[in-house]
Length: 157
View 1 (tube, rainbow, N blue to C red):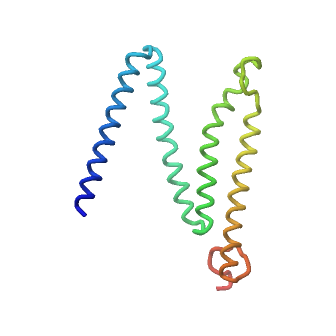
View 2: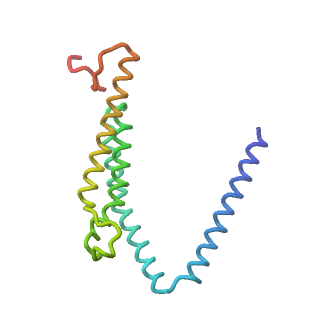
View 3: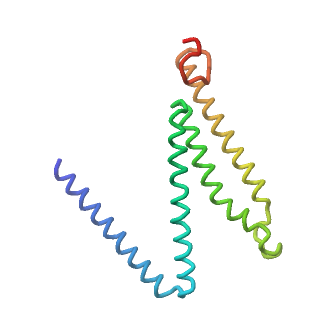
């Protein structure tokens, strides 16, 4: 049994070493290939990402705390919808913000990103609700009871 742990430790060291070598190679290429002005832009972007992370992290923790009150059966579906919707929104917001900044001839995609975001979030919500209802119906069929979406205690109890 101890031989396996030694093997796993070696694999971790090799993977960690490869990561360090690749990071150093990337840093070398960054310093030697990218102009200084672009490096300043990259540094500003990284600082902005750090500030955004500091703002979003407490919001994510607060949402996670609020989700403890959601019944367990529904929680997984709600979490999946929130994560997916959040990722889609993070991708779409820069496109919405920059809409119209390029002439129509230069723009690759001249779409209404705000409208498309709303449609995509509605689709994500619908899929989450339908998958939750499917799980409720399957669970009730397996138990031989009538389908209900109430995961909490009975109101008469």
